[in-house]
Length: 196
Image (tube, rainbow, N blue to C red; front, side, top):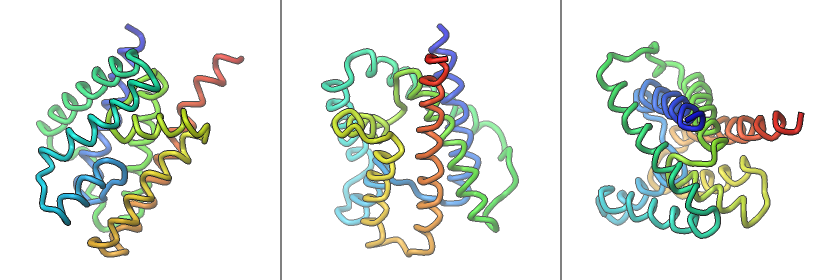
């Protein structure tokens, strides 16, 4: 039950930041979401087909390398994220409009994503295919988790320059950098607490 409570908190923080900051300021994502947008733009394939396919492939790899418990916790976390998205949509925006301060939006949004996802990963789950992919890359390469996230996010964002102007991508680079490092910091907090 304690893990479920932490998954709930992580999902709440993550979805709050994306709904109240990223969606309002049009800061795009790297990872699976960014890859889905890229494929939709160039190949005109609906996200309704692309997203489940990409997430499914990432979760299949994760199941092979990280096991069934990871998949179970990830399904719970993903459900919580969806529920909280729906909840936040029932309310007017809860933060000031940051469209005129995109760098502040990028940093603050990255903080919400990094802390929320970090809490979920610390419990042994994930909240999307990009998290599962980063964890698989970490498992295989033994890189720090922040480096795995940056590798996937930066790859997708660089490819996205083929259709998104650089001045829009720069804020996404800021937010994925902040979130990647925060995910790693929050995840490592568990290791530090266990050792002390």
